[in-house]
Length: 303
Image (cartoon, rainbow, N blue to C red; front, side):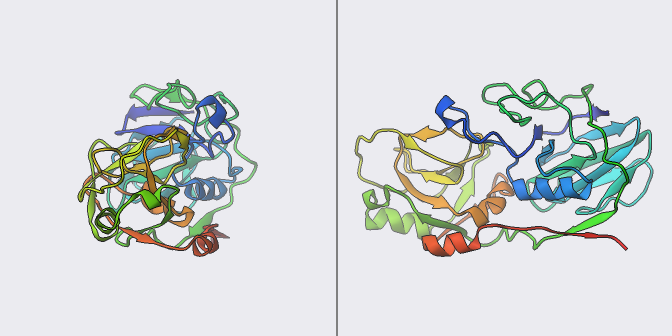
C-alpha cells in the first residue's frame, strides 16, 4: 500500500491504455510516454502493462508503510527520500518500511512516471487501469490523487534485482517532426508558411486532451467537412487559426482541418512540453517517420 500525504498538481494512475475502444468514443489514453512507463516497470520486475503513476509538473509526497520497490523515469523533479538515501532516476529504488518519497517541481520537462513493484492494484475498466479524466472512470476513482488516498499495490515478484535504464534524453529544443495531414491541401502558401516558419508557445489551458498553441495564425480554405478519425499528435486548425495538437485523452473524431500529424518518435517530446514552451514544426516524409519509430530503452543489471 502507498498513502498520499500530499497530492501533486495532477497525479494519475496510468498503464499502457485501452486501445480498440474508439467506436465507443473512448481514446486509448494511457501513459503519455508508454516506453518510459514500460521501462520503469521493468526496473521493478513488473510486466510492462502494470499500472503506475504519471506525475505532472509538481509531484506528490507518498508514504510506504510496508516499504517496496520503485523506479522513476521521464522528466527529473526535485525530490527526496525521508531516509536520506540516494534518489536516482532510471534506477531500481528499494524503499524501507515507513519511508516517504517526495517529489516537488519538475526541473527539465513536464512528466515523470513512477512504477511500484507489483503495480497499482486498482480495478480495470474496459481492460485498462488508466484514468480517463474527461469521463471520470478508470485509475483511482476516475480522478487525480488527493491527500489521504491509499492505493493498494499488487504482490511483488520474488527477489529484487537492481537495474538501471539507459535511453537518450528527449531533445526538447528541436522542432516537432510531422507528416502531412489529410487536409494539407486546404492550406494556402501563407498558411503553410505561418505553420512551418512560425514559433508557437504552449498555452496554459493545455492538458491531456490537447495542447493549444499561441503564435502565428494559420489560414485555410473554410469548407464544411465531415468528422474524421483522429489520434494523439494530430494537429488541427480551428477557425481562429490557432493550432491544437490533440493529446492522449483527446477526442477520437474531429471536424477541423488536419494540417499535420506528429510522428511517433516525437510523441515523448510532446509529453514533456509545458506551458510557455516554444514549439516549432518540421515536415518529414512518411517512410522516414516509420523508420524512426520503435523507441527502445536499454535495461541492464547493476553491478
